[in-house]
Amino acid sequence: MDPVELSPKRESDRVEIELREKILTLEIDPGLAISEASLINRYHWGRTPLREAFQRLAEQSLLQIIPRHGVVITPLSVFEFFEVMEAMAMVIGPAASLACKYLTEKEIIQLQQSITQSELATSSSDFITIAAQDYKFHRILAIATRNRYLSRHLLHLHQVATRFNLASWKRDANAEFSLKEHNKILESLQSRDEELVQSVMLEHIENARKRVMGTFQS
Image (cartoon, rainbow, N blue to C red; front, side):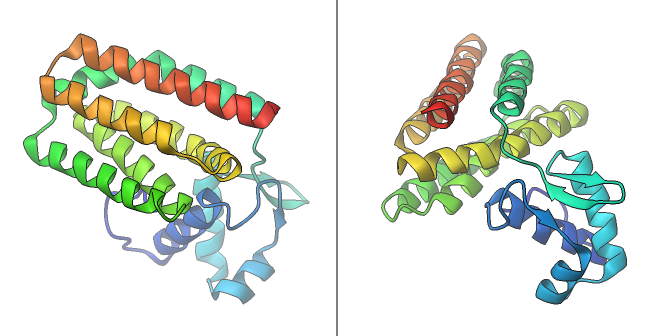
């Protein structure tokens, strides 16, 4: 699950990508306190690249650097998820409209391929792959806005939401509703109906909010 646009050029970029993936896929538990020494010994990362990765991932809200105490993987908080989805709902409509306007045929094919990969993963309950494809689907749409500031903001929100979605799918052992909604989004994009795309996307975000909130409150 690699949200970085370009291939890593620095050692710290590689460490950031690998550590981010371990956080987003819940390989490293939310709320866990981690030490530089343990990560260096386990994954053979350099100390300086790891510290640089810590700083960037803290800016992405995936971990917290606590002075004189160390580093903690950001816990899965219902309140944080509510704020993320609230922020998402405020920007996703206009963003979807822009994506509908600028989306290329190549990107439409990429969206379809992402859905296909998700459907294949569903048969084996491979929720990590589903989460990776879910992020990829929304990343394609974020990039399709052709607005680097908006796409960066959307990608940040989707990164934070990824862990919540994955935890919810694992707990419910079901991601089919999200896949059906992705198909619906794709159909609306192919129609090039900007109002319909906005409506369908907002419905998707609201349904995701309800599903995850329901899972964590049950």
